[in-house]
Length: 249
Image (cartoon, rainbow, N blue to C red):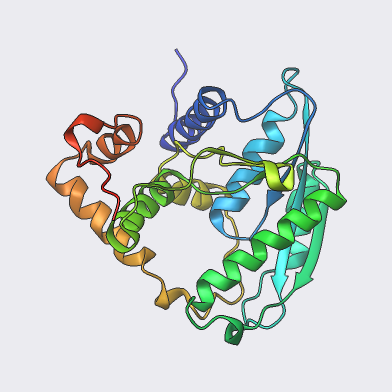
């Protein structure tokens, strides 16, 4: 009987949760061409490897392209040679696209939000140029749950980043194939694979509420070890009869 090392178990768990998310939410279809948003962090590097490997199976048949978006006005830097080399070692074409934004154009929004929004617009541009019909982002289960908590806390809205979002206005679909993978497993995967870290991290990271929500999620899991699964289940278990009616003002 084969003996699996701890690293084998981690990689099997990552692969199983990845495949489950892809199948459960029907994220990939025959003849898809998928653009991977390759930021250079551990999550996008893991996504690149997982999608590249899955693209080699017979059904469904799909292809992938990796794109790294650089914001020229932010001192945030990735090792482009490493990213290109890693993508190409997996048989994935690599595209580098440069853009910028002016944080003074909308002082109501944080620089973090504006940067993210402009990166997303750039990904749409590259996806169209490459003939892609889907864009894959490296958000994992923790990201999705933290966004849910942020929206409830700060926006008064029950919503998050769905595994699949059809954007008919842009004729593009956003998918998050790692939606069922825990961040802890991706941290272990990064260690196992020896993923390189960013050369210089984003200077606006400390201004985001996301790190606070990570602590909130951890606190909830201390109260209930199954809290993440309860939160996930709540998104498709809306008991409308137990909620206030909408009142027109």
